[in-house]
Image (cartoon, rainbow, N blue to C red; front, side, top):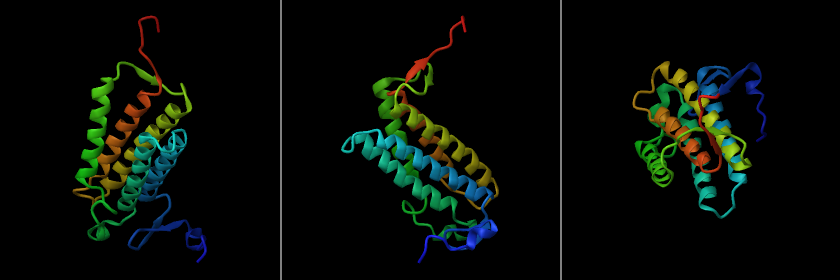
Length: 182
């Protein structure tokens, strides 16, 4: 088997569990953004200590994004083939990320200013990941409006992921609060 199949040379891509769609259709755009978010989280993870809790947490998020991508890459008529927690996002996955946000909020409090990315490489990478997660969320909304995704937790997961990445970056970045002089 080779990495290239030539099947996509016509501008289409294969879906999970079969079928083909245009590469620029709403599904591939959304799961492409999810893939980019995972790569950005990987960049942030590369800035952590290999044996650190943050490194392990970022790896967990990257793996969860494979599940998000699988669900988005499945045609509505094949959603019944998805497996909860393996290829389909679950309510428990959303609850886990909410609990992680709550832990950070309890430690640091709520943000009181805007994050200014670039204080350090880790914080900047987390902010890039947050921004790509928000784009993934917006494009997943567009994709899911097409129908066939009732009961999906993808949007909730992507929404919480962006919030979580924001809170993680908050610990590594400077903040700015607008004043009357600005």
